Structure formats: structure tokens, C-alpha cells
Length: 393
Image (cartoon, rainbow, N blue to C red):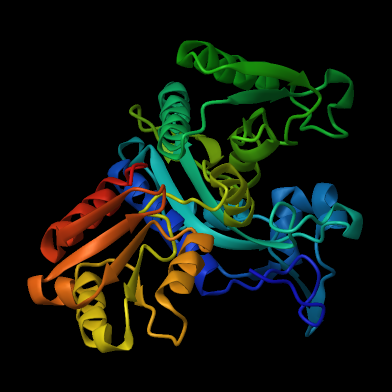
């Protein structure tokens, strides 16, 4: 990842290795969301001012939005959030209780004009790709859907080895109703009670924070600590009782009557920029095999072994492994040191003996070494680590 002045501060350019991290996270989320019954959607990067005014976001977010663009007497904004677009998708046809819960997911780019003093590499950027989704459900489905999202968080924590975290339940402040928050005290108390019950039932550690809710409902912010002890705000989960009314969202209930759904906003992996920034620090660059941009480096002992190195790389690549054969002019020792500095999980050293037997001398990132490893056996080992997303080498 790099940031260049001519592109703009807070607007990261993703290089090949960083792009692999983004794609692997998206692949992970897609698999989890497919299994949970989410449907993928895609929405534009800009929209008319009317959409954000109708959603109620503009009065609250205008200062952190990019200035509007005007064409043919119509003002357009870069989108700072995906939710108004998803509400329009929900409203694109009549809905029945049989359609609910409806879970719409998108990896949508969002743009927010963070103040210059607040920009902080990947952790606070002006362009971000968000692991976003909105769940539309009946009132009696809210608790189960919210709990399912909490369970998804826990799955990711276990996968990434995040064992220190707390969830922050952000509540409204009564004195700010009609100013900072939607003016419906009864709806606030009802929504907050739902979320509080779920959090208590989940057993997940949480604290309450008065006056920090979104304008449309209570929210959960996820605070996690990396292995070196630094705290990060990673993701959010929110209950929205305002947008369905603003957008006239309804479904036909079992009695044949129109009813308004609840909307749950959720982003378990948050923005890729911030989550990857956290993972870089959390792993110290030692990414698990499935996430490592380069999984195997093939290192020939001398130039005479280039052909076998190429064959090994081709075989591993065919197996779906990200591999590179280092055929440069450096000596073998220098090539090994370079691979170690790049935190490559496996270094496959090959010479005449290995070429004759179709084996590898495998050096692991943690210092272990296994000689005379059959090529097919090694390929199967690596692909299993990738397929299971194991944290082990």
C-alpha cells in the first residue's frame, strides 16, 4: 500500500501484495455470508443529494462528506455509506413476511473527508472498502439476527487469534432527542432493550456508553487489542428503527397487513483498510499461510537448478498456491534471507539431489527444516493449510 500526494492524502493505492490481502478477506466474508443466507448487491459510488437528505444522513454527516458535484442543476455526492442504497433495493418490490429476514451484503467503497489531522495510514483513510450488509427483519426476528452477527464476530476473532476484545453498547442521550438523535424515546428504549438482552445472552464482554449511539439507533462498536497491546476500533453492528419509516419500507405480515421491518447494519470486518492495518500489527507480518501474499518461495541452489525450480513453482501454482521461483543472481543464502525478511511461510530449496528425487528441502518461517520432502506431499500440506485457514505452518 502507498499514498501519493498527487493522488491525495488518505487515498491509499493498493499494491499487488496488499490487494491479495483484500481479496482473501473478501473471499472469507463471501463464504461466511453465503452460508448464512446473504445476497450480494452492488451500488454506485455517487448519488443525488436528495437520497442522503431523505435518509437523514446529510445533516449529520455533511461536514465529513466530500463537497457536492453539480451537473444540470443537480447536486451529487460521493457516498459516505451504503445503507440508503440498500434501503432502495429493499423497496424495489413488495415484500412479504416469507421474504424475511432479507440479508443484503456488499463490498462497497465509501468516501469520507476525514480531517487532515485525523488521517492515520490505513487506520483512518478517506477511501475505504467496507464489509457492509443490512438485514431487514420482523421485530420477533431481531434478537436472533443480532445474535447471529455476534456469533460471526466470534468466528472471526477465533480465526485471527484475537483473544482480547470488548464490545461497546452505545446508547442515546435523552436530552439530545430531536437534535443528535431521532425524536422517539419509546423506540429508543425498545431497541436498546433488545440489544442489551442479546449482549447479555451472548456472554461477550461489553460495556455501555451513553450518548454515543448513531442518530437512528443503538450500536455495538468492537474494540480489539493486537498482540502487542494496542487498541483498535474494528467494526460495528447497529439496530435502525428510523430508516424503514423514512423510506416507507414495509412487508405484508401473516395477517395480510403492512408492517415496518427493523434494519440491522453490520460490518464484522469493518473497512478492509483498517482491518488489514490491524492484522499487519497483530501478526507482525507473519500472516497465516492462507492469508500470506506469497506462500512459497522456491530457491535454487545454483543456476543449474533453475529448470527444476520452475517446474516446482508451476506444480505448486497449479495446486492453487501463491508461489515464486527466485531465479535472480544473488547467492542462495541471500535469497533465503530475503524470503525470511518478507515473512514467506515456506522456502523450498532445490538442488541436484532434489531434482533427481522430485523432493524439496523445506525451510519453515519459524526455523524448522525438513529435507527430502516429496513435492506432492508438500503441495498437499500447503493446500490443506490454505483450505482450512489454519494458523499453523
